[in-house]
Amino acid sequence: MKITQKIDQAAKEDRVWWSFEYFPPRTAQGLQNLLDRIERMRALGPEFVDITWNAGGRTSDLTSELVKTCQKLIGIETCMHLTCTGMPKEKVDIALREAKQHGCRNVLALRGDPPVGKEWEAVEGGFQYGVDLVRHIRKHYGDYFDIAVAGYPQTHRLPPEEAAREMQYLKDKVDAGANFIFTQMFYDIDMFVEWVRAARAAGITIPIVPGIMPIQTWNGFQKATSLAKITVPRAFLDELEPHKNNDEKVRELGTKLVANMCRQILAADIGIKGLHFYTMNLEKGCRMLLEELNLVPRVEVVKPLPWRQSLTPNRRTETIRPIFWANRTRSYLSRTENWDEYPNGRFGDSRSPAYGELDGYGVWLKQSKEDALKLWDTPTSIDDIHALFAKFCVGQLQALPWSDTAPSSETTVIAQQLAKLNELGFLTINSQPAVDGARSDDRIHGWGPANGYVYQKAYLEFFVPPELLEMLIPHIERDINITYYVINNRGDLRTNTHSDGPNAVTWGVFPGKEIVQPTIVEAISFMAWKDEAYELGRQWAKVYDPESPTRKLIDEIMDTYYLVNVVHNDFKKPEAIFEPFFKAGAEYAAKRGAPTANGTATNGHAH
Image 1 (cartoon, one colour):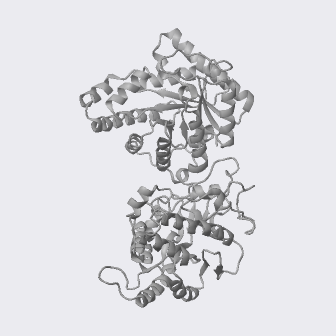
Image 2: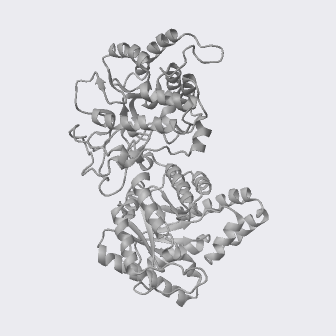
Image 3: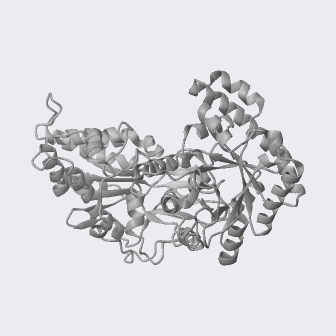
């Protein structure tokens, strides 16, 4: 989606919006850390993010990679910077072509700074000015891209002729086809408002988005303002300088000063409703500013669907996914990347999904061996394993091999029930509570457009030993509202469902739309997921030495346990799904014998 469409939409709804800028780090580890941070900061509700381009394009591949990841995995609309510095035309065209392939619709065209210690000069076959780059993009890509250009409020303090010349340069870029303007950072609110009015008087009518730099530390503040050659109001210096050796205090006072400036921008009669934060790849400063301004993320921005949408061109219209990969989005995207089309509105013929083979894609744990041992220690009895899974359910463990991240906020609603299930011997790896018409802006269950209602059937997925499964099935079959699938590692499937089609387990009802059913349970997909679920367990076992008790224990579980998914189809009875499990679990515990003093049952092996 184009940024100007988002700006127009916000204007129609008369609401304030915000966005974040990041820069590509120089190392692979730095890149992973930044992606984790962008993922976390997505919860702060930015309308879009933008990714800078290093002078001379040294990190240009990283910029392209970041844009791709933000669009595809993080599912957030992204604007890519593109500079003329050190960029021949061919390189510019490669960058634009890749951006288009990733589904990116927004580019910030800049001349860019010269490499450190050098004068600026165009490369052979490159572009001299930002306006040349704007013309080139328009000529070759028509209106596919929204083109942003940079505006410099500081130029308003130049002598009148120079200021007028700078404004003309900006007007030339707008006339060449720019759609909106990001401004350089500033702290002088009066200067900014005057500059905006001067731009409007010069006939510049496109949206202007103010660039806001949070104040993190005194040294960082000094360095950024001198590098950008911007004036800092005396009041800022008087407030901050006495505390220059106390970073916490500078950040606290700086947050209030910058927030006050933002309030003045939004209150001034200059038609600005959006703020673009220069994050410097840091989370805290932006979070504090948004809190100070009382800008709360909207659920429909953070969560347009219950799962993370992919904004690449071929997946943009995808509206349905099987629930099994709820905690492994990256894997689902990889295993389905060769599909010709993605389910939209309905899942289609249940025999048609062809999932990429595991050997081609490879399944691995996100954790290094060292991190895995720290997280999961060395369980030596089945009760140790039960305890690990139960700890995860109540939020005392950050990850399991089947879940890359901590439990979602809605898991907290059923955390105690899940913990009990694991203690009874059902090793849960995926779940959702029943929801009967929560508002779409509900903080825990909500997703999708405003003024809607969302529904869920209760769902559980777990590994279970054969003996406990045999005790569970009769209890399940007494409740006509429960459907289940059972599979072993060889792929033998059994079920009590009489339909080949998918079972919708999440749906939403929104004004002026068809009912949306984004999450389903479906047999073919479950069989494809089974391979991955067992393989993840085997990967976990491989963290430990071949002859160790832990390795043998986990391997034995993966060899003998069944993988089961259960749906309770009556979403008006949130507790009903758990009852058969508690009954079967009590029978199993009685049969296993009471726990001994050291906490392991008398036959505490994996079968």
